[in-house]
Each structure stands twice: as structure tokens, then as C-alpha cells.
Image (cartoon, rainbow, N blue to C red; front, side, top):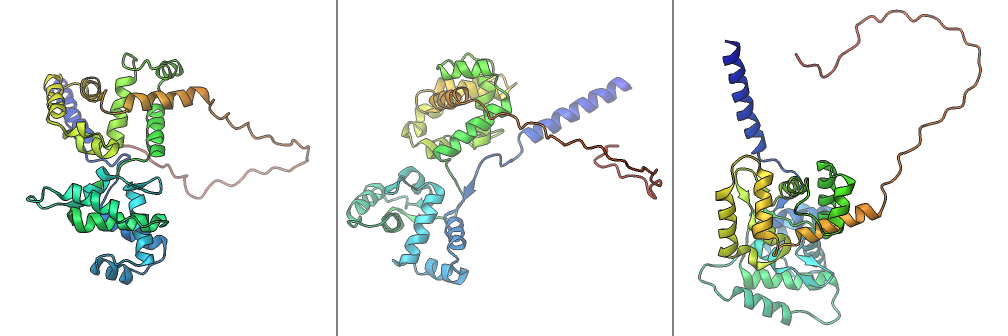
Length: 310
């Protein structure tokens, strides 16, 4: 009887752990639509909601305050970088071209090239680029889109994942020298990175679209890359997902994403710059005083015990 109960408990634990592992956890991932960014920027600049509503109804009119809001929103979701550059593979996520329209991309590029006024500030340039997408690319959608990590956020993602996996110092040195694929913690590290960053979802698989939004390499969206991913999935033994991620990386992503170089760069910074020292223990000044001690009365109620499990 005990054996049967133990088997039942083990089975339930296995089912429960699988359910948790495949849950829709947020990790380090952000999905938002354009309107959310627009209204967040409205809060930054203290623009009333009724005014924001008017701007939306009037198709984001060419006014200084609207330019400021549009620029802020585009910076927020990574569609505008470097002060003067629209990121096509991010901006395009927020617009849906008509199925029969085959010229939307070239038409939008031409619009942006012809709409850049001389000596304009960043807000005006970003606004003009947005209007080209708004008028030439497609309908502005209300779907929450994957928001790519900035360069600094990618660095933090990698550093946090390295710390979470507890990669030892000697292995980090190997990473910094470009020796990564055969290291004992590398598969687990990349699993954490891709899971935490929103590029892989248990039960759903690798998101090539999110990787494309992050890095902008069109090879990520080719049938050949998808076939490679499918082949790696088909040969996976179903045990550890880190092994599946490793197969994706080695066979499919190694040459079309910068993951290996980025891990090497972060490892180099970690082994080059020593960690901050631990704070010294607090010091107290010892003084000799004469005190009279009394025994405190017993408490009227027993002390509380928190977070106990039955």
C-alpha cells in the first residue's frame, strides 16, 4: 500500500512540476501595444487622457506635443535608436499591411527618405518616420508585441543568467577566450537566457519571430531555419529542454545570431572587472557602564511563528 501511495505521489509531483515548467511566466519579457507606450509617455509629460484621446482620434496630428509623445513611444519600444534611425524590423510589428499590398515596404522607405526635414530635431524626425508607417505601411494594430531588449538590457540579461546558473570563474575565463560550446554549464546558461528573455517558451518552442525582432537578421525567418529548428525538435529525447536549446543554438542559430559573441563579451567584462568587495562588518564602541538588570515579565501571548507548513 505504501508503495502504491509513493508511486501516486511521485506521479502527481511529476505532473505538477511539468505544469509549472510550462506555465506562462513573464520572466524578463515585455509585450505591449503601441497605445500603451503612447499613453505611458502621456504620463511622463503630464498630458491629460482626454487630450491623448483627441490625438488618437485625429490621427496623431503634426503638433509639437504629439511629436514629443510619438518620439518617446518609439524610443520606448525600440523603434527609434541612435537619435536618427528607425528600426524597420521593430516598427513593422505594430502595423498590418493589406494582404493584396505588395509595395508597402518600399513605399514606406521612400516616404521616410523624402520626409526628413533638414536640421530637424529627434522628435520631428521620429514623428515623420511614424507618419510614413501610419500612412504607407499598414493599419496600426492593437496587438501586444514583443519588445526587444536594448544592448544594456541584453547585457543585464546575460549577467543575471550567469549568476543564476552560478557559472564558475574558470568557465567564465574559457567563455572570455571564445571557448563556449563544450563547457559544462553552457547549455543550461543558454536555456535560462532564451527562456528568461522571451525567445523560447516551454510547450510552445523557439520563437524565431522574437529573435528576429531582437536581432533583425532576415535569415531567422527563412524556411531553412524553420526546418532546422523542426529537425532539432524531432531528434530531441524529451528529457531536458536545455539540451534542445543547445541543439537549436549549435545547429540553427550559431551563425545567424550573435549569442556566442555576446556571452564572450559579458564573460570578458566579468573576469576583467573584479566584483565589489563585501561590506566590512559593523564596528561598535565598547563602553563600560553599570546597569541594573531585571527579569522581564513573561509575555501575555505566545510569540507568533510565521510561514510554517503543516
